[in-house]
Image (cartoon, rainbow, N blue to C red; front, side, top):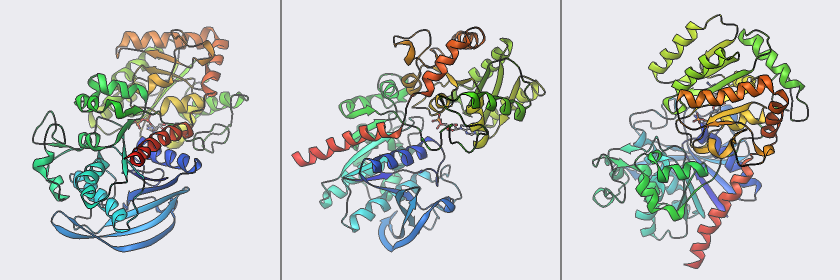
Length: 493
Ligand code: ADP
């Protein structure tokens, strides 16, 4: 079976967030299952060239029409950490992929529309279509639209599309002119059951189009799949998704076992695992020394997060005050894009400067993140919504007990120590429901109290989390079942 993965990101060469990890982790796990995988990426000028091997120009004459003019595209093959990649460099006058960054440009919709056309022309002109095109998020939503509105009319009938949604907060709302740049019929497509946005009829909603036209749609956890169908988490796409419900599923992401292995992590000073926990205590000491916290018999609660409304920033600030009042220590590593959120946390940092029990580090710091996972006792993830979430899964591997809101992938992976129908050995954290201080504080009370007064029970909870295997292999097998189901439908046609 031949699978093509299409996305705007692929870790570690083009990573902004979890989407990059998904392509890297799923791609490698599919290869381990014996699948022929190719990753197609825009040839960004900001790709990490030092992490790419075997780059080779294979075509410099992939021509196609875009925005009313012929456009030439260069195609290179390369390897990224065992993944076979195809890098597409359209020679666009606006320098679509020469912007020094992956997203955030005013013409993003046009940039990624061009990438999608280049990818599909790459297959079409070589007459080598894969069995499955697996596309991701709004940037590649036009893959199934083009396949069925254009290539099928040119006798491409044996390829199927799986479309994965990683965050419904970003749907690719855009001017419908993007569709005509691809030669698509605006009048035909701008209807409520195709690409016309439900809230703003003059806008195209690319993610909606991807859902409507794909053969199968997935999202990154079963609970988020339920939420986007049945609650306001669907962000306007509930009806479109309900119409697709028979072909929609949540598949839980994994974490990369190489990057996140406390036994072999080069970014932590003292290796450890579930059978050798002494290193964990030593890492706590290093973390305290590094951040200027006092050595004390206190539970250390941490947050490692983007500082974004989605992540529950108001609850984070409340957790800090409450933890300190209850005799705990508090560490936050957070990066904010929003200047107001940044200013709010700068004020907090200023207010607590010099505290022996509290440290706020504002910015993105991979090495410090590893040390925090390795040294902290508790990790708070109070998200308002969370499609999957990696933080809680990483925390558990590093013996850091998660405290989470019961949403999305957090609800699928964290099981409350006290209120849970599962047997005690399957419980691994603390869960609260409403995004309000009282609910948060009740969870914090239980977590800090267990650490302070019942250390053996806390140690057992910590070990339960460390023993969980959340590899990409499980996800890859579920995706294979989906791909095989789609291929079987072609065989039966
Ligand atoms: P999202 O992709 O929505 O930001 P996830 O929980 O899926 O959230 O993934 C977050 C990842 O980013 C984790 O690996 C976490 O350790 C890392 N991370 C988040 N903020 C920071 C930061 N400020 N510095 C270093 N790593 C961070």
